[in-house]
Each structure stands twice: as structure tokens, then as C-alpha cells.
Image: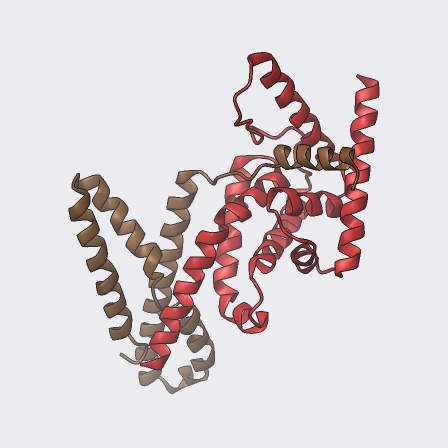
Amino acid sequence: MPQDRSKAKLDREFSDLYRAHLRDVYSYAYYRVGNHHDAEDLTEQTFLQAYRHFERAQRESDGRPLRPWLIKIAHNLAANFYRDRARRPVTVLEDAAIVSAPHTTESLVEGREELQQVLAGVAKLPDDRREALIMRFALDMDNREIARALGRTDGATKVLLHRAIKQLEQVMATAEETR
Amino acid sequence: MSGETVEFEALLRRALAPIDPPEALVERLEHTLTSLTEAAAEELESWELASMRDPRNWVRPAAAVVVGSVAGSALVLVRVRQRQKRRRLASGSLLDTAERALADVVQEARRLLDDGPGR
């Protein structure tokens, strides 16, 4: 029956979306909330919501990729998460940055420290700038995708990213001076 | 773009490296999604029986059709993958697992074509 076929197709496409972007959603959630436990909850809720609204999203996407839509769901859920629990992400992330290239013990410790400083700096940024950086650097989203996820124009997103990077550089420079 | 900016962006990319979800989450999520589709299918089926008996329920078709069309059928690949995992634990033969996986896909596709909301 045609309806059965379209249902099967829809589920297959949701499976594809799920498998293609599970890592993106988890990475976003992790860097957003700062710990694995809450990141797991947020990821699960994101996919459940996505599943409920998948058909409509597909219809309205007009063939465009659905990753920004998926990340937007995670973004909204994360905002609710903070509003409900009245808390901000923890500054020190559990064990996110893993340096995979071979290093000496000393350079490994230095490298990890530097990455931890970056993450601490990112956590101090305003929400919208932090999110833009996570989308760009953790998820490798381009300006257009980030704009769609944040509900901004491409131009505004470009400015947002530029300011986020500049502010992060300043935050890190200040932290370096006070060390 | 200056060399310093490029370097800083590379540092950011390393700091914000993508993170693989824990296997436990993957298992849980796939189980939840599969259960959800089955529950939605059952709900749709019971609504169909009730609506035939009680005309007051006839106002619900639009909502039920939405649930049915989005969540009524199984996530074939997810479900097949779950079966494969169970089999891998049970069987050591790779060829045997591959043959069964193929049979699963055929069986799942056939089931979807057979299990229409009207049945």
C-alpha cells in the first residue's frame, strides 16, 4: 500500500538522520551542559522530539539538510534545562579534549592544560557566542547551518562568530596575565 | 585571515573535538525509539477497534493518523541492528550472522508492508 511504503520510507530516513547525527547531537549536548550524564539525557530528549516532529520538519525543509533543525531542538531543550534547574554549565568539562597524536608526557600535560584553558574560556562566554563556537568547531557547521539553528541571518551569524572568537582570545589573554 | 587567527581556530577545533556517545546511550536510545514505534502502532490498532464500536471516538481520526504515519511503523534499521547485536552475542559465526541479518531486513520490510493501519 502507498501509505505503508511512505511510512517505511519515513522511518528509514529518520534512522539515517539518527545515525548520521547522533555524534553531532551528543557533542553539542556535552559541550553545552558540561557533563556526560546530562548530555545523555539531552541527546535522548532531542531525538524523541525529533521523532515526533520528523514528518513535518521533512515536509517544511524543502530538501535542505535537517541537521540545523536537530541542533535547534537540542538548543531549545538545553535552554529549558537551565531555566528549569537554574544552573549554568560547569566550567571544567569531564574529559572532553583527548589529544590523540603521540606526545611526550610533558607536552601531553601542557597540551591538555591549554585545551582545558580554552574550554574554561568558552564556558565564560555569553550563551549565544558559546553555542556558535560549539556548532562551528565541534560540529563543523557552516555559517548558513548555524544561522538556521540559531534563527539568525547568515550575516548576523558571521558577526556573532567573529565576536565570539575575539572575546575568547581576550578572556584567555586575561587569564594568562593573572596566572 | 592572519596566521594567529588560523592557529587559534585550530586550537579551538582541538579543544572542541567531537565526542562519541557512550555505547550505553546508543543502546538505550535505540531501544526507546523501537519501543515507541511499537507502542504507537498498538495504540493506533486499539483506537481503530474502539472507534468502530463507539462513534464518539470518531472525532479522533486526524490525531491518530498523524501518530500512525509518523510513529506507527518500525524503525527497520534500528530494530534489525538490535537483533544483530543480540545474535552476535549468541553466535560466534560471522557468516551465520550475515545470513540472519539479510533475512531480518527482508522479514522487517515484509512485516511493514503487511502491517497497514487498516489491518
